[in-house]
Length: 171
Image (spheres, helix red, strand yellow):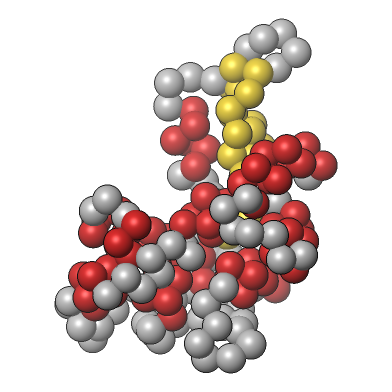
């Protein structure tokens, strides 16, 4: 799957286009992590690639705020990629496997479209920006980047996706 990914290439219709569909098309996988239970009532955490569902709902014009419900209701249509038997840290452990080049967690795709002021802290905003940058193959730790870039983007209410697109150094 990773062989088709082109680091630093961000597909967009026009320079100002910062929509979730554009981000989804730029990725190979969008991971939906869900905690559930097995037939024996044993807790498990599962991961499914919901990229095709995301693109479908975004293409259909479904409101971004409604997509999580649609994904939750229909994620079983997507093959389970991986699962972990439940434990206190299983959910976080599974989420930690979702951020690689060409791959991003579903919640990060949705949150990438929220304005900076939506985030409780600048740190949460910046952490999401770094995950998006990693998924897109963009170096968000570039030493030549203005050290105030993330703070300014957060305060100016840019979406994390917009803030990352302003950084142009491929990994």
